[in-house]
Image (cartoon, rainbow over all chains, first blue to last red; front, top):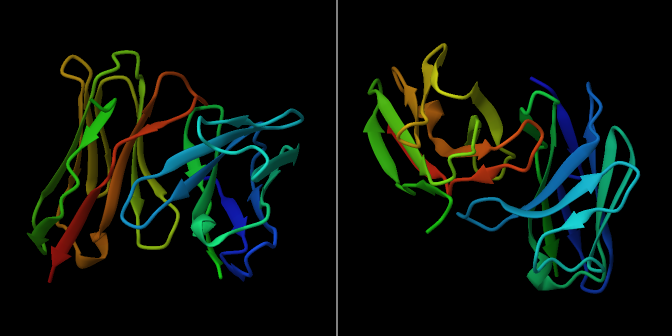
Amino acid sequence: GAVVSQHPSRVICKSGTSVKIECRSLDFQATTMFWYRQFPKQSLMLMATSNEGSKATYEQGVEKDKFLINHASLTLSTLTVTSAHPEDSSFYICSASLNTGELFFGEGSRLTVL
Amino acid sequence: QKEVEQDPGPLSVPEGAIVSLNCTYSNSAFQYFMWYRQYSRKGPELLMYTYSSGNKEDGRFTAQVDKSSKYISLFIRDSQPSDSATYLCAMSTNAGNMLTFGGGTRLMVKP
């Protein structure tokens, strides 16, 4: 299957700092990527849809200024958690789809805010 | 009522058993159906992808879609301890559209 790479896999930061997570489609181009958040033992919660060359579409309740998404190329989308706080600690996962509709996920990034 | 319903489990079976995982849904516009396997602290891995109704087989895995009943299934034959994971069903109305996920079923295969 298609490969989606996410980096870093784990990050620990101090409260108030910003953290950037990268999502790359390694063997295909993705005009659309999705960012999810997952709490322990819960399902995936869609945060936003990242569109190459345009603004991201955020789900209701997700703060745009808190979670900055940039999709600068057809193979790279980034999620920046700004001024992170302990309640932002979570597992963040990106995904990208082929034009057939198959959706592939990255390995996920575990954020811990101290 | 959620758009996609999935029994959270946990489902515990002995090694070698046939496992049946199921999801029901309410939106008749769903056409694309997927099953993902997620190990703890890892991203979901696409197992099966089907379009519309019918069966699809891949190794020990068989996916079934019954659109008339709005019901999809994933069967795992000869289950192994390495199959222990959370299984998520997902579906969408059109290719490339946002997926709607079930809540996931936690499966435990005991040696």
